[in-house]
Image 1 (cartoon, rainbow, N blue to C red):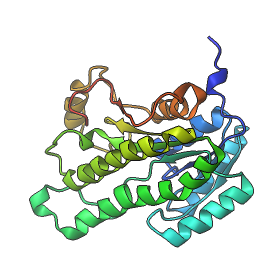
Image 2 (spheres, rainbow, N blue to C red; image 1 turned 90 degrees about the horizontal axis):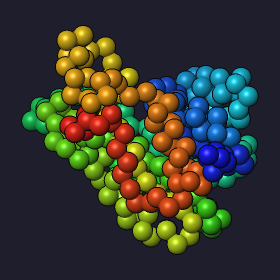
Image 3 (spheres, rainbow, N blue to C red; image 1 turned 180 degrees about the vertical axis):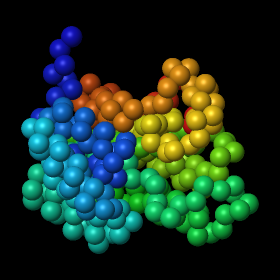
Image 4 (cartoon, one colour; image 1 turned 180 degrees about the horizontal axis):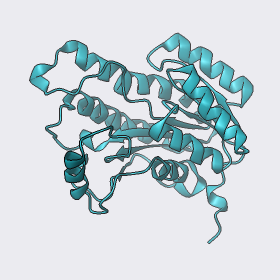
Length: 255
């Protein structure tokens, strides 16, 4: 089968939170498919390290460090990206782990905990989508891919209630915006992640227990999320919009 439909040559992609882990995997796969990638991260050194490694591998990439919760910083960064690479054709909103977040049961949290998640995972994502969408609509082609989580669709007892609420909210936005801009040639989708290799240094017994609940008996790899993002960003993904694609190894618990 021809793979030409996956070719992103001539497209510019912005991946937020791409300085490590899943975001890095997404940026690398988009670059491998031919896209010029703006690598965003809150930390400039992480963004530049990933961008440099993509360039070393023969791809096109620039670092675009900024805080997605800062409207002025976002506007400045998009102007720089457009000047260096071109307007953003593909947006992958991956930034989703606020600095200072705490994993705690809802009754042990307060409004400051909730706002950390809402500012990043709901309002921050909305802000970036709103910034790139007019240009995509005007040009008659665009892809928005929102990274979400299984925590959006199932109640869990692992202390992620505010995170899950924010992800549920952004998935709702995806469905509505996809309907609004569909006639313009822009698609809007979400990828809901299961347990990934970045779950941290859990003790071996707990990690083994979690993996037993996953039918494929392993954690997800960043490259696999990157591959899903490439599909949604490609011509082959052009008839998919308003969807939440669960990539979780078949796990019913959505973790």
